[in-house]
Amino acid sequence: MGIALLLALLIKTFLVQAFSIPSDSMQNTLQRGDRVLVDKLTPWFGAEPERGEVVVFHDPGGWLGDETQQSDSGPLARGVQRVLSFIGLMPSAEEKDLIKRVIAVGGDTVECQKGGPVKVNGKALNEKGYIFPGGTPCDDKPFGPIKVPKGRIWVMGDHRQDSLDSRYHQDLNNGTVSVDQVVGRAIVIAWPVDRWSTLPVPGTFDQPGLGAAASMAPSALGFAGAVPIVLWRRRRLVRKARGTVD
Image (cartoon, rainbow, N blue to C red; front, side, top):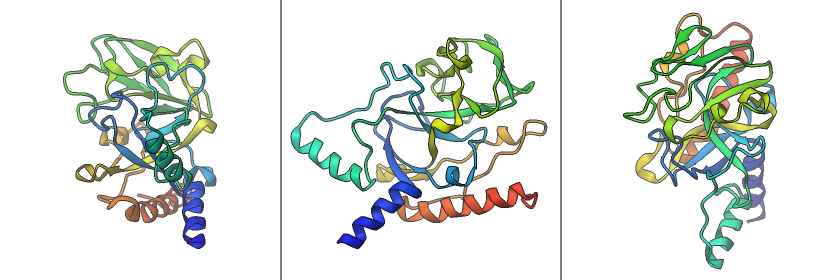
């Protein structure tokens, strides 16, 4: 029992951790109440978030607003959550984290005018595959052009008309988030069971002139599949840095 607990704590600290989805801001990619597993390993090796990835990050300050963590006020439910969060199988009720998609990284210029697409470095993104059906790229809150500083990222929710993302926090650092505040990349929807799937980088982020994004393995089976995916991605990032990745 002691060894199993130690192993669980090591996995939570260095490999993967479960987080719950507290709002509708990432629909339909993620639904309120989904549990995702987050890769916490690759940031330890200097890897920074890439365009198209779904990432969990600490609240930069005043972002949460209505996007609060759900919780059951019952004492039994709180006790169970504390135990499971201690070993990394559920998020803590006290966590102040958000989850969004990385649209632009340090050095990029990002913009979106009303009626138009999001553009990164002048390249239009085809976002039909992941933004909320019937939604628009930015009609509710056009922005830019904005130059993203090195070491920071520009993030947006997939449900653009229900996401208080970088567009709404331009009073501080132009709405960008420091990579130091990123907990990790969401790689797997682990719960509910009928929604098990990985969270790949959309193909539009691989278009010429924009920069390649790391792709995910085709499938995973919950927590058991998450660790090899994390290790595989770390090896791929190392090879990519050496110029050996296709």
